[in-house]
Image (cartoon, rainbow, N blue to C red; front, side):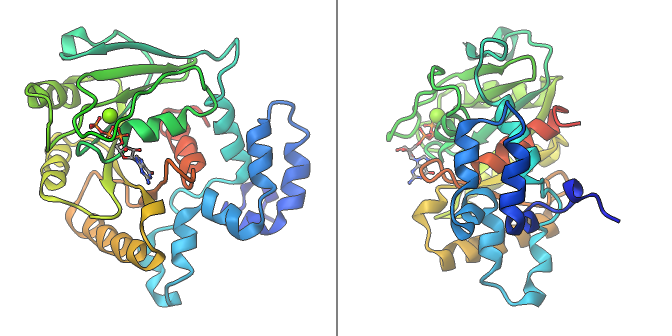
Length: 284
Ligand SMILES: Nc1nc2c(ncn2[C@@H]2O[C@H](COP(=O)(O)OP(=O)(O)OP(=O)(O)O)[C@@H](O)[C@H]2O)c(=O)[nH]1
Ligand SMILES: [Mg+2]
């Protein structure tokens, strides 16, 4: 018989009172996450599992292509990851330093993840949302494209490092290619690259160049769809299907499940925290 803890994530939403009861026995479960779990079921699904929310609008035979079950953690695992992203005395979450060249990058032994994407796609906003449980960490965002000019390193306790990259495309820094390409090629402890694509406009020409670069360097990478609060459900579904098909047919190194997120509504943020904790070996 299956152990209830190991059952798939989204299905567990139907047993939420029992999950809440179990989680409340952990002293460490953050207040914020306990509150999320108290949301009405449909809202909860939207926040925790946004792809499942999109899936509801598809005919059953169209659903297999979405690969929803590859990374489908339980609410308990999501709560564990939230704890890793919560700043405490013993789990310091801090900005470390910035660099314009790989040889100026801090020498940090921990596993690292980085966020790349077109300027203005929402990299810094996403990192800020991921760090919402560490409100003292300052991550700068701006309406103007080309805001982030350097690679900014943040450490999450003893667990891993997160790197916010300058954007490519419009108003990219002059030394962008040298800086980012060299980092991606040479950074030894880089465990996963998160390539952000705007869910409103989909994959653009410059995104294709970045995808080709990840493929050429044989990097394990993941496509994150940003700003999903700005898309209607129909438009988001169309983009998800198109991009998923592209990932299935044209890529080798891309994780075959998309991560839709909104830094405004927090949809998908908890799941992404959990994925980061998992790929950096912190949920084993
Ligand atoms: N509605 C909405 N707006 C967002 C979201 N994420 C980012 N934005 C907005 O998009 C703009 C750019 O956000 P940034 O996070 O600075 O983008 P970036 O990718 O870091 O940009 P560069 O540093 O210039 O490369 C800002 O005005 C943000 O408020 C989101 O999820 N939803
Ligand atoms: Mg930025």
